[in-house]
Image 1 (cartoon, rainbow, N blue to C red):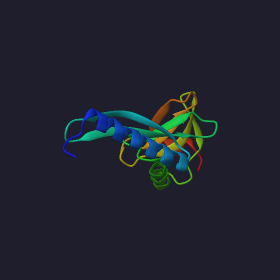
Image 2 (tube, rainbow, N blue to C red; image 1 turned 120 degrees about the vertical axis):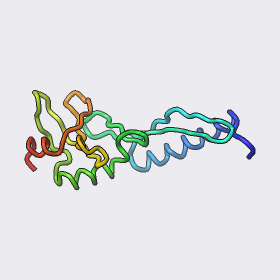
Image 3 (cartoon, rainbow, N blue to C red; image 1 turned 180 degrees about the horizontal axis):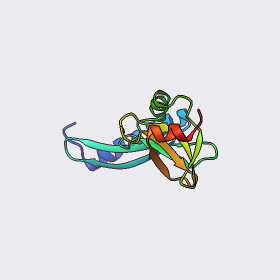
Image 4 (tube, rainbow, N blue to C red; image 1 turned 120 degrees about the horizontal axis):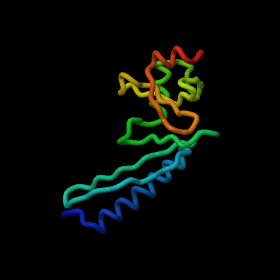
Amino acid sequence: MANIDRMTAESILRDMDIALKSIAAKYGLLHKRGRGRFDAAKLKASFEFNVQAAGNPTVTVGFGSQHAVTASASRDLSYLLPGAMGKQFTWKRHSFKVVGASLRRHKYPIDTIRDDGKPFHFTTELVRKLIVI
């Protein structure tokens, strides 16, 4: 192939979309294709996977965001706060549920979802004080 033209880029993106949808179905995730850019020498594409927890709003985890994948967020959380996954706590009149963590965020590594579905990050020390593990 000498270069990437619009037709080739669209064909590659369609094939990637089909492959990623089958991967998402295999792991019980929802798949969403983002934007793509191309020039004659390269093609750049983005995508994300969404996890639908039972009774909870959708939590987006994907490449390019602050989350890598759910498994690593769970592993990071078990390293920081063993047994905290799924625990709930109240802070400033709102209820929060612990859904993961990221060791890459040093100051606010704990991922939570507020009762209205909005995601928030907390310090390990604050979450340790507010929940009983």
